Length: 304
Image 1 (cartoon, rainbow, N blue to C red):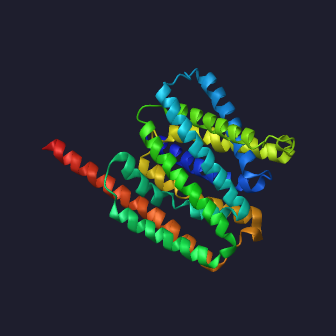
Image 2: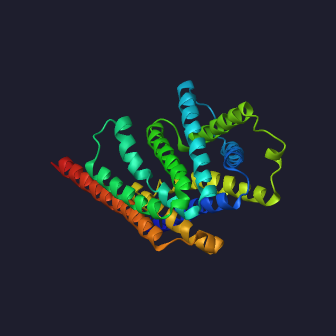
Image 3: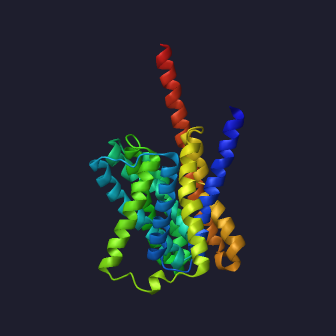
């Protein structure tokens, strides 16, 4: 049992490393954000469909589910467009540190959907995150547009995660993912048709971009998703959440190694980044302590 946990813990770190590599691929791919997301989602749908056929899984979903998945498919598609736009107009480090505000946005959105009170501590930690971002925003003015795009992506990502927290109670994770990706492609396709975005140049993708896109959609999207679901069967939500918070750190280290001087930032940036990432990790530790306390209290009640 211990060996299985260790194996899955190492697999989780690999998944987080892969997710961190997503931002690197976004920077390496030369096509714009919208076609990038369209190709990514389309290819990922194909890979997950193959997985469904291989595992002989059913594609059947009720009408209400399809409506929910269409709505969240639009959200995740828009989230990715702004995420990759943030990378294109700034860099990997700026985009990912700003994306760490997701926990703060989730603390505001979650009470609305789960009908619970707003947690004062979460708001306080969120304000500390904003303080860290203000330091970055104030001293790295050339990246303001990238920070704004990343904040929009962060909010949409938090909204997407909260809604999936509701859907997972009724639907399997792979079914949710398949239909959200599918409807995300449908949404972007509709947008491109309306704006006459399907030009000859849209389909003229460089060979290196095709290689990166296949890697992005297969390993970083389809495989990482399926593997992450598998890992959650063996590891606690806290372990998963805390490890996922390491994604920006992995990505920033990778970016420095791959892009070198392009990713070198000022000391002020790293101070702001440290505040943001420290608060994100601190939030995970506090939540784990609260969860353990609740479980302990429930055990005491059962014994009584």
